[in-house]
Length: 199
Length: 314
Image (tube, rainbow over all chains, first blue to last red; front, side):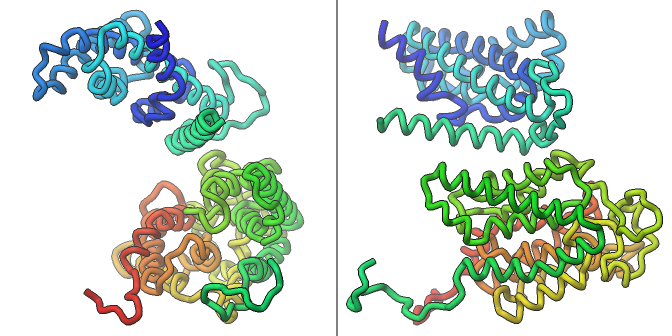
């Protein structure tokens, strides 16, 4: 049980996909303009990660090595289609604001990276925990980034105005703000991790 | 260090009397005429902006040095004061007081200290601050105040913006009798400071000359209706070109080391400035051009590496 917990845990902090592995940065930069968007994207990616990890790890012995990437893509695309249709049916507003980035989860490097680096080499149960951990880590990172960007760039948290006289800094909503926030957060997380390891 | 005459140190043994600290204070001195002109033209509100910006820079520098366990005495080297002053020169005089504060923090923390402090920054800190403010609060950063003796008290566009382009004589533009940022309007004062820097050999003329030359040639060719009819003197005298070319592009840390590299750097800045001025969505492009070329400096340095003395070229 302990090693399963380790797989779950590592995705959240030590190998956080956004801050430690620097994977999946393009949806991170693009959709983290508000907490709702960030959370929606995180959950969608988590679902796809979980699904693809399970399928990939259970059929890993049947996939020929040479064509494994196309096989992974087909499996991932299946789950992305499910997510996209569900989102369109039940959360039309979210689907509209995430736009092209939901179908683009197919080529999200977190999902593909986990399929290639973990699920195709480990058993089903371990892969479930890995996918879940990575998904939670990705979601947390997205929510953190989008909370900072929404608060500074729009003056709101979850759409509620915090301080009326606050003049939002537009840069945080625009692309350079995303890069600044991610850069600073990666710095802070690296610093914290270094301290955890050396201490 | 123990004072014994047998201490062996590596070369160079003859040291220049100019230290980084002295250079910083000389640059600040050379910027003073433009600041005094700004205060004279726009009134005491310019002085307020300068003070707030400098204090904000110095305090953030001190706090960050403390956080990084460095000697907080380093704030006395003048670089934070210089950054604050340059940042203030890039702002309109009647700006809400909190904008220079934010600008100072961003300049020092995101522009300088995060890269490792003085000498390690990739980008010119004052310009990082300015561009951050420009993108964040475009309205405040482009609400220009007219000179205090102008009859209509309505704030006007900078002459570079298309609607503000007419009605200024070259003399007005040269003396700073028009709306603009605090430190960029009075070309006369800036040139006095720039000549001082060039004659004391603190900056070389390569970057400003190639920068301004490129802007003037390109503005002459492409700036008007049809080719070769652009008003290049207008492009020289408006906006932050003189301030940027002499005082910001020549920052030691963020410009190339070799002469050839400096000329390439200046030409690049000039081309980008004209591109942004004539084709971009912003009226002024000097700061973006310099920042962009700052990013290319390592590449230029590598390309223009000089031959080591005594070693054949191949």
